[in-house]
Image (cartoon, rainbow, N blue to C red; front, side):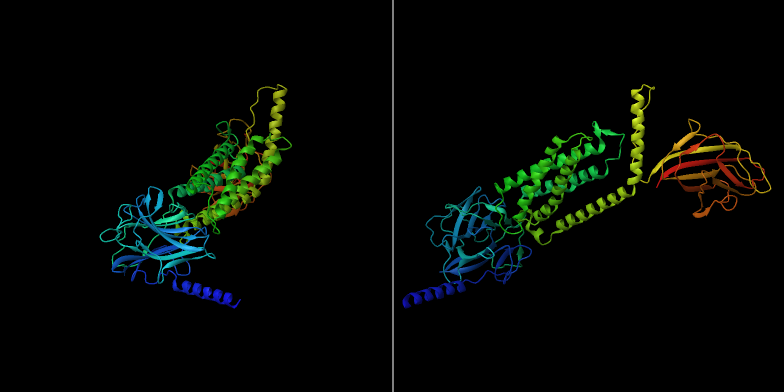
Length: 579
C-alpha cells in the first residue's frame, strides 16, 4: 500500500510539473518579440482566438515557433493556421492542434488543403514539427473550453511536394485561423459557423521585424450576412408595417380598393406574405451554411437557432390559419381574430431578441460582439415602433366615440338603403362609408354676399336683408352633420368701406363664435365687441358645432356696425374642421 501511494504521489508531481512547464499563450511581447493576430478586443484573461509566431533556431536549423489559442464549441475540437497565396486557402499549408478527448491529450499536426478537404502530412520529414520539449505542447481547459498549444515548424520543409509551404523570405502568405468541432482520421474537418478568420494582408512570417501588433477580425460569412439582411427586411420592415396597417388603419380608405380588396387588407397580406417568404429563404441559407442544424454550444449563441426556428414555425403557421377564417358575422370569428393576433404578435415580439442574439453570432462578424452598433440601431427601432403604436393607440382612444357614432349613422343609412332597394322605392345611391376622424379639413365652401343692403339705425345696428348663396347646388344647402365639429368662417371684404367699422357674428342656435384678427381674439357678444373691419382684411371665426349646419336663402349672418349708408359686398368662406 505504501508503494502504491508513493507511485500515485510521484505521478501527481510529474503531471503538475509538466503542466507548469507549459506557459499560457499571452499577448505580452506582441509587436516586439513576436508577431500576433487576434481580434480587436483580446486580453490574456479573455480572447476568442489568437496566434503568435517568432523565428527560433533548433539544432542549427531555422524554425518558426507558433502559438495557437482559441475557444472551442466542442471538447474534441481543433485550432489550425493556414498559409495561402490568396484568401481562398484552397491550396494552403496548414499547422494546428486538437484535443483528443478520449485520452485527454493535445496533439499537433501539419497538413495541407486540396480544395475544401484538409489532409494530414504523413511523409518522412519527422522533424517538420517539434511539439515536445521545454514549454512546448498544449493544454485544454474544459471549464471555459479554451485550447492552446505551442510548437515549432521548420521554415523550409524538406518535402515540398504536398503544399507544405516554404516560410522563408521573400514568401509572404495570407493567414487564416480556423476553429472546428471535429477531427477526422485523415485531417481537420471544416470550421464551425463563424470559426474562420482571415487577415486582409499577406504576412512575411520569418521577418525579424515584427512591427506593431496586427489585428485580425472575422469577416463573417456571405451566406450568414444575407441570412441576417433577409431577416431584418422581413421582421423590421415588412412585419412591422403590416402589423400597424392591420391594427390601426382598417377604417382608412373605406371607399377605395386595391386588387379587389380593402387597401389595408391587401397591403397587410402582401407585406406579411413577403415576410414569410424572406424568412423561409433566410432559414434555408442558415441550414446550408451550417450543413444542417447549428452545432454552436456556447451561451448565448446556441439560443439564437432555437428562437429562430420557433419564429419560423409561427411565421408559417399564421398564414395557414387564415384559410380557416370565417365570415365577419360568424359567431366564431372573434376566436379566429384572437388566435391570429396572438400568433402574429408573439412571432413579431420574439423576432426582436432573436435578431439581437444573431448580431452577436460569430458568423455575423466578430467585431460586432464588442462594437455592436447594429444592436443599438435595432434597440432604437424597437423604441421607435413602441412610440408609434402608443401614439396610434392614444389617437384611437381620443376618436373612438366619434368614429363609433359615424359608424352607427352609416349602418342606419345602409339599412335604409337596403330597405329602399327591397321595396323598390326608386333608384338610390349606396351611402359611402364614413372616413375616420383624423383632425383634418373635411369640407370647405364659399358664400358670396352680393348687394347686401344695410338698414342704418341710430343704434349702429344693421341687418343684411338680401343674401345670394354661391357654391350650393340645392336650397337649403346642408354642408355637414356631426356631433362635434369646428366651423371656421372666413370673412373678407373686397370693397372699401368708406366710413365706420363693422362687426360680424354668426348666430346659429344661440352659439357665439370666437373672432380672430391678426392673432388677437375677442368674443362676439351681440352689439358689443367683435373685430373692426378694414378693407381687404380677413377675419376668422371658429366655434364648436353640434347641429346640422344648413344655409338657405334667408340671411344667416348678422352684421353689426356703422356702414355710413354704403352697400357692402363681402365673401364668407366656410371650412368644417373636425376636432
